[in-house]
Each structure stands twice: as C-alpha cells, then as structure tokens.
Figure 1 (spheres, rainbow, N blue to C red):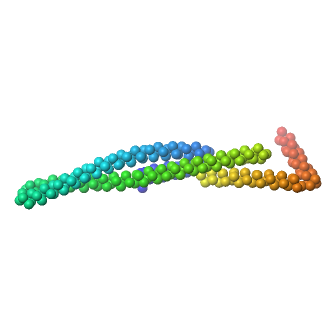
Figure 2: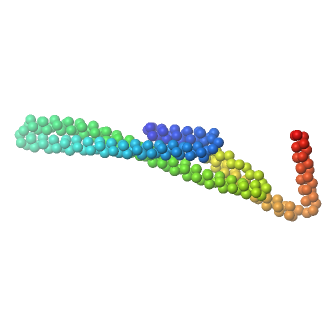
Figure 3: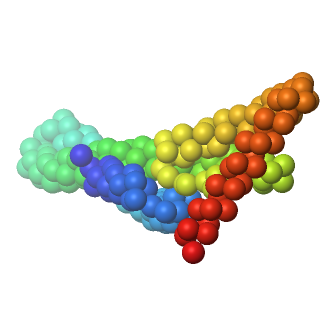
Length: 226
C-alpha cells in the first residue's frame, strides 16, 4: 500500500466515521471537500516535481548510454588499428559509463513507476472529490424540495416534520421519508374532505360531538396540568 493510498483511505474512513455522529453532515462534507482539494493541489505539485526529476534522470542515463556506445566503437577501432592498450582504455571508460547508465536507468524506472502510481492515485482522488461533491449537491436539492413541501403542508393546516440530516444513506432514507410523508398528507387531506362532503347530517353530528369531546379532554388535561 502506497503512502498516497493510505492517506486517501484514512480520509474516507474518517469522513464516514464522523458523519455517523454529525448534526450537520453537509457542513462536514464541505470541510472534507476543502481538505480534499488541498490534498489534490499538493499531489499535483508533487507529480510535477516527479515528472521533472524523471526527465533529468532520463537525460542522465541517455547521456551515459551514448558515451558507453561511443567508447565501445572507439575500442573496436583501436583493435582494428592494433592499438590494444588504447582499446583497453576505451573499454575501461565504457565500463564506467555503463555503470552510470545502469544506475540512472534504474532510478528512472523506479521514479517512473512511482510517478505512474501517484498519477493514478491523484485521478482517484479527483474522482472521489467529484462523487462526494455531486452527492452533496443532490441531497441539498432534495432536502430543499422536502422543506418547501413541508411548508406547503403547514400552510394547509398540517404540521411538517423537520429534516434530520445524517450520512449519505441516512440522508437518503430521511429525504425519501419526507417525500412520502408529504404525499401521504396530501392524500389524507383529499380523502378527509371527500369523506366530510359525502357524510350525512348524522355522521357530521357524530364528528362534531367527537371533536367537542376531544377539545373538552384537552381543556381538562390543561387544567390538571396547571
């Protein structure tokens, strides 16, 4: 597990844990998004540094490779000319450049692999950011719609229930419940009006008596409470 992967996993785990107890999940999500965008910015800077370093290593091993090949060609020419000592000297320098080539080539390969992993992790962080941000916008829109529907119900004489914001799944359940409640209240009101309209004089009188009894009961409970 790379350092970037560990940091991202800890951040996501921390977010989920905190959302379980949060009274204002949206605010907590905003804080998470702020910290995430800062990590993305720092990772992008690190990626640029890694790319620049890899380019320098590549230039180093390519230069060593060119000198290594050049010294080998010179050694061949020296042997053809019968200059064995000169050939040995060229081969000695070739071995020096070959060692340098192998060292810088390995550094380049390792840096390139790490840079590729960092680039992949950075893209994953960006995807995570977009996913959390899109969910935030979606739930805010749904909660606002539910709150407006509640106000409409209250205007018609029904008491709405305030939203209790939780984590993503709890937000999903909460908003769905609010939407169902709004729909049920509207249906109840229509059914109640229809029943009252269709009821006869006797039924209406029975309803009035029941309402009067309930009001009297409430008044007695209020008097007893005082």
